[in-house]
Image 1 (tube, rainbow over the protein chains, first blue to last red):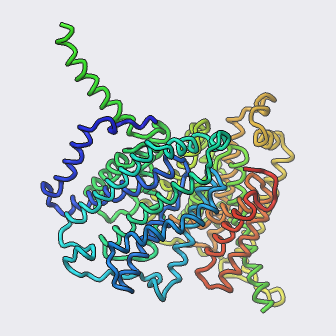
Image 2 (cartoon, rainbow over the protein chains, first blue to last red; image 1 turned 45 degrees about the vertical axis):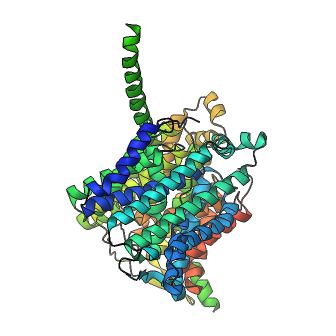
Image 3 (tube, chains in turn red, orange; image 1 turned 90 degrees about the vertical axis):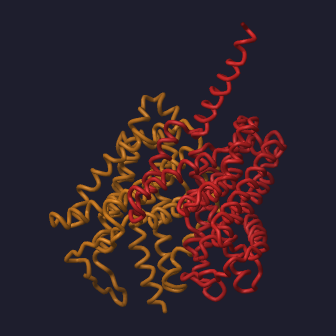
Length: 335
Length: 289
């Protein structure tokens, strides 16, 4: 597995983690914190997508299905039954896992572009259905979540920093799961499926089973992101929860960063969200098309010139840096 | 009741003609270049804006502007093939899918920046015109669009079967290596295939303009319809795509009539998922994987 970057480099990981933990203490500007929360959330969803799209190379463009199911499950439990989103977030994950079984059964027979198209269709069907469910899911108008003030037990906080740490915890969870899987038999099977499904099948890998398992995990994680998102913005409607943009962004951050690598989605999200924040401060938020125009240009550039993603650039730099310092240490020995 | 059904079928068939132009383009590119073009709908959108600006600035009839939108988009297609698609042909699924996908995002959002999200319409003398045959009502603009769409499909069929270049395209679609051994230049054939496909999308845009508003995201509907039709009609099969597009038009129209105005798309998606589940190779067969 070639994604050794940072996994062998504990000092760097610890430094990053310390910086991430310290950030809300140093930064109090709400705009900056909001952007950091979005970076963490989308990096997390990218990590969830990457398990499926990066390692097993099943290019889903329908992860909004799980994001939306997670968001709706916890919100319905909260508003209709008064159940805390802490339980709802897990329930949403379970619902998404359950939904991934029939969706997978339908889509796994398809490969490449057909798989992508079929996953788009499943997410769109769910969105259209939730537009129709006016009685228990508020239809097209959506609903705002009740503001309970500072209620940590109901996943509602006064300070943005709390949301930040929650998002950070989700991302850490996603990375830890990916790290574990990378080093397990499942990880090797996944890469085998991703490299060549027929060959994997021929040497005895049950490819359908592997794809089903990783889809369960990926769907569960994505749904957690969905619940977090509606809890954070206090609003839900089908167009937000099942937004095609969620599916796109999940794939996009992974591809720009580097598919099938532990840190690829994080690098991709940091780069894209930073760009988008800069654009917002330059152009204001009034210009709809600017952000996606720039995203798509970045995506085209990455595909044409660095299809393995930008993380390679960082790996090279880091290796040059560590190799440089190693050589510096050797000098006195030689002398 | 029977009349309502018949009317829905007529309306569906007429719009299905436009879907056919888009799907034939998608299936042609897939058949020859082996790429699924996610941006096909955006080229319909570009065709619409070309016709809109020609009509609003110079008073050119949208049907006449077909003569401009088609060659312009043919040129765009050659450029897209030469500078973008050609460079990912040797790479895997991921770059191939996401290149045209990124192109689609790019074109949509550039259109949003340039033209805003406003709906643009063109009023022609025949935009509101219609006539009756028995109990059935026919909108003239849609009938003309359907007629020209079928004509263009027939011309494409004759081109593919009757000319050397067309035969070279079919040969390259069947077996790239052998075609190269026979002296066919695949780069040239691929450029022509993408060019023709985009010209058809441009034609669809111009034909839509008298009765359909142009806006930056308009292509999404058409490309989704095209995907369903292309899968239903068996990928790479042009006649299949044509028949399936007409069926999609009818299915959508019946869905709107009997399930509700916002249900057309649900019907379409459910048809896609059913097709993928029951007949992943499409209704017209053989091609496997």
